[in-house]
Amino acid sequence: MLPLHDGEVRRGDRLIQDGDLVIVYESYKQMKAVTVTKNGEFQNRYGLFMHNDWIGKPFGCKVTGKKGGFVHLLAPSPQLWTLVLTHRTQILYIMDISFVLAYLEVRPGCVVIESGTGSGSLTTALARAAAPTGHVYTFDFHEQRAEAARKDFERTGLSSFVTVSVRDIQGEGFPEEFASEVDAVFLDLPQPWLAIPSVAKSLKADSPVCSFSPCMEQVQRTCEALTTTQFRDLRTFEVLLRSYEVHEECFGTDLGLDSSNNESESAILSESSPPHKRLCSGNAEVIDSGEDRSQLSAKDNLIAKGSKKSRRRGEQLPGYVVARPEAEAKGHTGYLTFARRAV
Image (cartoon, rainbow, N blue to C red; front, top):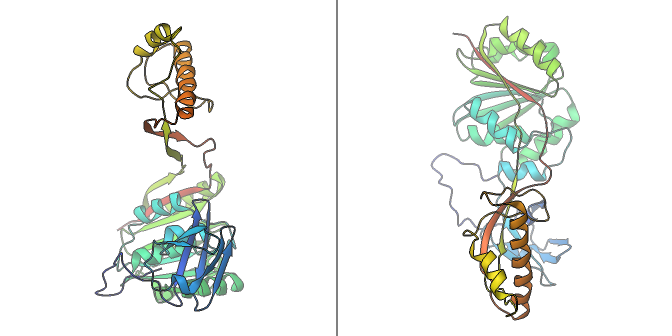
C-alpha cells in the first residue's frame, strides 16, 4: 500500500521490486491484485506476462505480453484495493469511505477504533489516513474473517498500523484500555445502539462517531441511543454516486453535399451554434440551446450523413469531448449517522 513512514516522501518514480503488490489494470472494470515474484507468470485474455519483465519498471508503466496485448501496473492505494479485494462481507465503497474519512476527521496521529472489520475495505482507508503516527484498532466477532483480514493487511503493508482483534462489541463493548483515548469510532453492526454507551466511554471529548446502517429502523434506534448518551450534533446522510462517461466524438464539418441540395442543406446548417450537446440514440442528452427538437434532429441527421461521406473520403474530422451520465446510477448502500461526544 506504499505506507508513509517517518521522514519518507512518496515518489512517483518508485520501481517495482520482487515481492511488491501491484494492481494489474486491464480496464476500469477489470483489475487484479498480483504479488510480483521472480520467475512468476500472469496470464489473462491479453496474453502471458512474465514477472521478471515487471521488476525494475516504475509503477504506472505499460507492459506488453507475449501476444502483443498490454496492461498497466499500478501502485496499490486504498481506492484501488477496495475494487480488487476479496469480499467476505458487504463492503463500503469509495463514495462512502471518502465521506466517512472527512466527517470523522481522520488524519495522521489519530487513534481510531472500528467494530465490524469485515473485508477490510474501510479499515485500509482508515489506516492509510492515520499513518504514519496513528493506529487503527478493529474488532470482528468472527475469527476466520479476522484472520483473513490480518493476512490482507500484511499483504498490503499496513499491518504495523492496524491491530485486528476478535470481540463481540455489541455484548462486551470496547476494552477499558481505550477509555477517553480514542479520536474517532466507526460502527458497522446489526444493532449499533447496543455499543453506544461503550463508544461514549472510549471517545475523547468533542470527538466523532459514525454508524453505518442499511435500514432506517436501525438509524432511528441508534439516534435514540445517541441522544440519551452524551452525544450532540446528530446527522444522517445517504451518499449516492452518479458517474459520467467522457470521451471524444467526431462531428463532421465538411459534409460533402451534392450540388443539387447543397444550398438548402447549407441554409439549415448555417443556423447551428458552435459545438453543443445534441440529441442522439442514447435518449439521454440535454439540449443546451433553445432550438426546436425537430430542427435539431434534421441537422444531426445531416451531420451524421456528412460524417460518413467524409470518412469514406478519408478526411480527418474534428473531435469534441462529450460527457454523458451512465445509463444506470449506483443506488443505495446504507445510511451514515454521525454524532459528537459532548464536552
